[in-house]
Image (cartoon, rainbow, N blue to C red; front, side):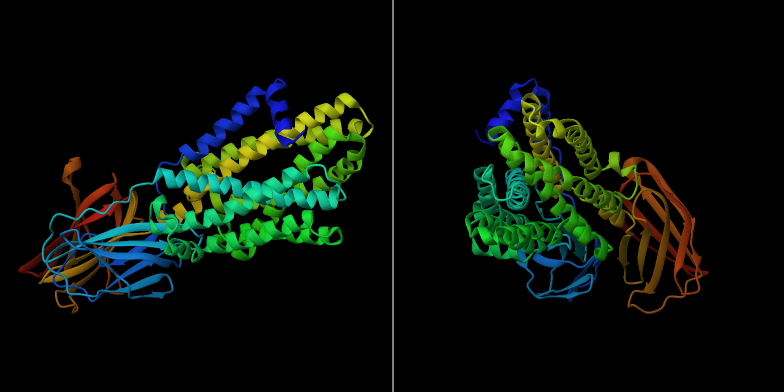
Length: 540
């Protein structure tokens, strides 16, 4: 009998609800995220989005909330012709991009796609005009559901290889003392991982470049995948999978060493990329991810070999069961502690559990973990002792219970793979506090206007004014007016206060609705002259 038989036993032994729950969760993890999310927030751009410039800029700049690596940079002309931008210089969190040609009049689009520190691609575009606005060229950012599904499937199979495969190899070498029960299942799981790891790398390259599945065989796609932080995860995962396989088919004398190194490789692979490993402080988060990953592999990997051993040769499996029972309590304690720390760092506020896709997936995972811990506790304190004593019926109950545990673990893999498409609340919070900015340029005067935070609610506006040729402008008074005629909102008028550093500020301001607003500045230059300048500004 193989592991599939154990799972079939679960589904036919009065447990259809568990099977249905697992299937629903796995499907939901694919279907739930329906929007492409950013993982590094764009803070400022030069030129700013919606700016109207008098002349062609010599360069562009993009500033993010964390360092990024550029993948695809392009300038789309007003006629829709894309121009690749290949000359750029990373400078901390800012990316300076050279403009290769003088731009004509009309609206242009600066399209960018970069890799954020957590290994996920981020894309967007900035519109600006030379002289006067024109019809904006179209830039598509459509979600490729086929690619997204392939990435999710690859992630699940990689988890199967790392946790059930490498973890299973460790259980056979250390807990089963080299007995063969579950060996074929573990080898099959490792082979799944050996296929999924390089395939996931190629899919990562496609996602990074925004390319379709049809381009998977192109060398540039694989180079892009290797250039992301996930490249390290895939490479370390391949090493871990190879060590796990070697512990099963190689010399018996080195099985424990290879298996232990493979288990450590599982933790290292997960710590190399992803949301949690990229979070600050990394001196804490990366070790937490390492321990969490290794702990999952220890627990989940032992389930199938233990269940098969109990099914086939329960007498010989008794020492295996006893060793697993003794070791699992500290492992669960480590899993719980690291999971709580990582969840606090990622979620930050309890309200985010319901308000964000990441939080809702976490709630699903927590519900599954509740069932898993309850089942494991029942196995540990009610079934293990009688099963070791040779109770036949109890042994059968334990085998069925282990099969249910495997189903729940697979469902958790599906939920965790769904996080690939959902930024954590931590990243959303960084983006939320970023200001909305616009540069207004006219021959008589220009201004840099920033509204912080750049979303609806109470905000503060900061204004820097200059002459049209970038000289100092000593104004007597500056008034800010925000209006949104398409929503029936007449101008919200506030007088600005001049600060000691030369900037003007408005504090008593509330933006009621999101969208594109019109910002107008009335600059009183003298008793006889008022300069009025305006530009659109996007409020989240």
